[in-house]
Image 1: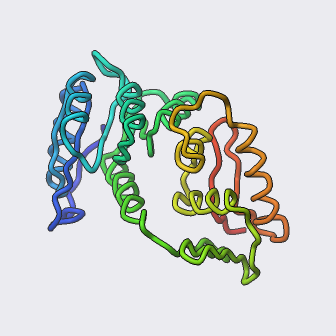
Image 2: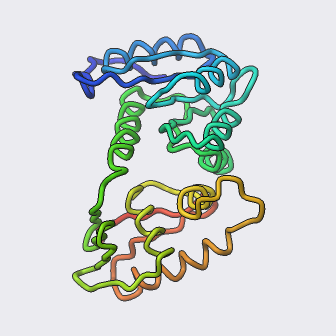
Length: 243
């Protein structure tokens, strides 16, 4: 991990954030502990998958930084077990691998974001801040992106002031994309968080693609700026890119 420079004022000085770091490299684990504690986090470190799994099962954390390759039990196994139990703790996955398949595996297992080793500590902090912001926005009712507006309370959606007529599923899909705007979401994440099916017995990929296609036509076809983008092999992202 590239780590150095003067540390900033803690992210939330008046609020201690219980954080679990599951990492088997001693130097990296200690650097994460020291850096995060100086930023205002309350850090517990686990060096094995079994120890980390036990802590996840028995204690409450508001943030998890999770290595994939661990002795005893892999990070992805821990992550999948958490999500099956209905634990929605934000998880930043650390991996030494940067292939598309590895990133997809982490996202599909329930990871919220991933970071490839080696990384700068400042980037880790930025990703952690983004995860915590998303968690604090769970009760948000109004969303905006460029000329798109969605009100979760009135269930009204407009683009450039024009109302969009969405089905209930299309509305839920768009709301989830807006809550995660700028972030790639996989089909597995949509199955779990929009279709509410944590254990998939049959593939819903075709169903998701059909609904995404219909939403894309209603949202983008009449406008120059296209907001829904497909990331081949990974998933979808809702974002506005300046021309």
